[in-house]
Image (cartoon, rainbow, N blue to C red; front, top):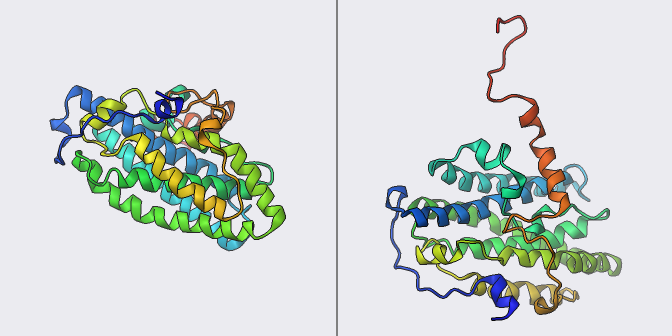
Length: 289
């Protein structure tokens, strides 16, 4: 088996026919697989949104500033869809987000990377690579066997279309300028190895497929993603690295290994929750303890 196949997961176990499983129908193994799937979806969206918020008031136009704010809001909303399902499985919000060990997060390293200093091209390339992948991942969940998950996929899919359109419009705009296209190329060279981490398998990939939680293999989804992004980017005059020749980053994301930048980001977005003791009710001045 090649490294490329190993990274993407090549388990071809036939998934069971479509069913309407609910929480009470899950086997212990099925619930563990479902939790892995949901955490990957939610963590990607949450961390991606956290990075996008760094562009507030810094985007190149008012329109793009507002558009990116809407994209970030949508991604936070999608993360909430998946974290809420995890709470239905017995987790608390604190366990999902605010008091969770940073090593337990399983998002792709693509979404945790800080933006380059002249990073609008970085943002455009990153969001395009990510949003195409997100469309493919969500489409693979439309006929999931887990009914509560199936009920939520449509909303996220509809909103992701707008995100891709925004990224594509800026790709076209920047690629028409020689200097801007050079910055796009630099961003692509830097981000592409991390984008491949979107397709790294987790520990329970076989169980995810066997339970029918996702109908497509990671390998087939990865191929669809490459078949989409490579010709599109090349059409804008960019050179896409050959996936088999890309040096794999030490941090894999899906296995809990991350870049140093992730720990700084996680420290920042959990700071308020730690400093303001949400486990204790707020009291007005003068009120007795």
